[in-house]
Length: 549
Image (cartoon, rainbow, N blue to C red; front, top):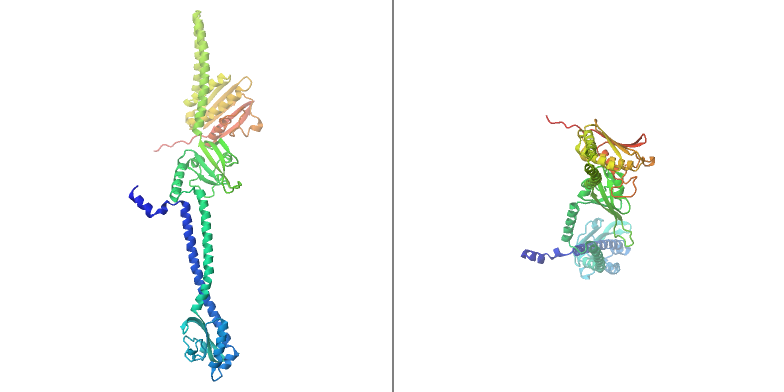
């Protein structure tokens, strides 16, 4: 280990602490700091309140003494001190104050806790007391610092001239003693608060330990960074929904597949984006789904959904949400359809090869019998039929890929005893529709028509009409049994099919056709004409490309 790492681990050991330990220590420090500050504030407040109480008590006692008739009468005698000193000491002992000094208006003492101070001058301010006011102050006198009050003594109970003054006080030392009596309770309260804080920290620490698995802050940060990288790097879309259907997390692939805003606004739900209702139901519905195929306007998506429940309650009362994964099967679906077409074409070629072998054996046998004219007629007739079919399709369709598709579909239909006829007008190449979309629309409509006609009674036929004079219109009609009136509104829904059984592509062909037509702002309709079922797909012409001057 490098020396810097060793020194860093020795001088900063807290960096190796777990998140739980770090949190508990920080909480303890905060709690103890708060307790210390609050304790200091309580002590200071207690001192302030004790001084206020001492001042109030001093003022109340001073006013009571100044209003006593015996005190007022004593000022009219030759020796006021002889009458006032015993009285002042009795009141001082009963009123819980440290001194009561009764004096002349000039401040000459008549009473004092220390008899030796009688006759001396009062130490301290008299304020407005000689003129009839009152005074409260903290001052250091003969007994030390004290909180005192000075009030006048008037010649009569109801008022009159000021004939003397009364000063009553409580020393700061006694005030501190009263505060000290409260300190143990303050300390006990602070300790109780600290114990509660420690207990709360321990509870929170245990909770954090369960949540974080004992990881430290650096480990948590690193793990979150890894998880974030993984979520954004995987090629499978991931969507997490809370119990209210709000999107909690969507990785990059989910944003791309569903066309979600990035970043997601707060409180965003799937109802806030333009998605087909079937897609929203698949993503937000109740229960679990595995590999359900849904169609957006541009994509074929395979969705798996599983409910998620938090562990808020051992009784299963936690909040519910859902984790949804999705995969883009647009290209895979296209390849699967092409593979199905290639497989069907291969089967047709195999059947043709078998039939050709039979005809070849017949030709050879005729040659061996010396019937060369009959052998030549049989061979040229088969060749002419095959060539005529290819010429008819290629002449009708100027798009090579579409022509090859229809040629293969013609061979497939022929093997199933279905006569497929083709009629075309205009140039499919100039219609502005991509080859991929053409194959999807025409291939699926023809497949469904051949299936329907093949399951019906003879004569079995399928007619394909392609008009590319203005935009592109594809009409496919068949001699099948037709579609019930109750099912006409569902023929383009994903999963609807008249075929028996189920499969990954069951009920997907017409839905894919509708997806392409709607994406290109076209129209598709179902009609009955003369007992035949007719599907008509109309696509608008592509906008003309203006060449730069």
